[in-house]
Length: 418
Image 1 (cartoon, rainbow, N blue to C red):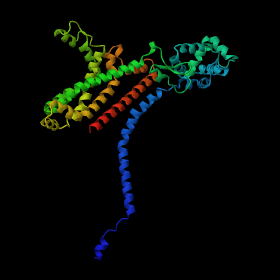
Image 2: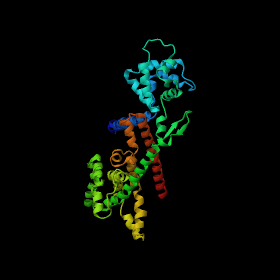
Image 3: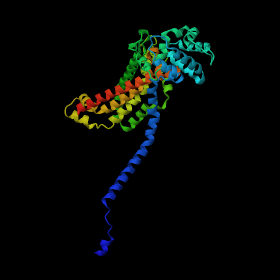
Image 4: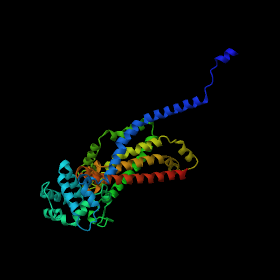
């Protein structure tokens, strides 16, 4: 008995056991963080940072303040009732002379041209007429007005004053066809200058139409794939996935060839006697719908198919055996179980359709261009990054709001059903 008792290990203190458990838990958490860290870093670099940069550029107004800080600071204190004082005039002349270095003149000229297209020429003429550095000037106000009479107008200085703050809501307001009046109040732009509200409305209409068409075509197709034998279903699934293996540009160009006046579609319609002359099927809204539905249809079919494949056919058979009409059994028993697939497919197709650029640009007409076209225009053609970022930010905000509304409606419907 004594030998056995001596060979038994002594029990560990409870404190040591708790410390070991805490250490093991910390190691487990560290491993989890180490596994997630690369993905989190990737999302921050390629998703959070670009979106944050876009949101900042939509209100960024630092061009004038970075090149002409003294002038910008003085004009922010200016009351706008009379011409700025002599110190402000002198600061503008000195900083305008120094702006030739490092491309500063180009930056402020481009920014001020958003206020009025004549600022670039005004600054260039003024720079050529300024006295040499170090030369004494008694009256900078008279000197600048002598170089160009525009410096004697309050509107010229008010335009520069609007560009002086480090942030601005100009681009966001312009993206909604709004502007600030002379007194600083928000007002609508002139009717002939209103563009972007119609563009956003057109974008939502096209994206919504494409989504509904994809749902109408994709639901029966996904149902067919889910109910056919595996061999036949797999063969048809290859045909559904085939567009993924073809370039987006190639598919869009193919639709132009098919839908043009002498294309296969018009020739077939005339051969069948449906029309006597070619129909306008391309470079309009019809062509945009054809091309975008063809490209986005697989993104509707795949979520629906994944949900339908997990629905047991015994539910429908049970409803029919209890006396329900086959269509009633399908609509009241089967369809409600596909709500999650419908929700995933529609939101995926809708969000992707909102950002389409190449397809509407190639297949659509001037009245079919979406917001992405104008974002590309301001980015690549005019280098107006503020306007491009503002349009992108508003499109992002609209997308998030629609997603939240849609998500709430779907969840409420599921709660009511359950």
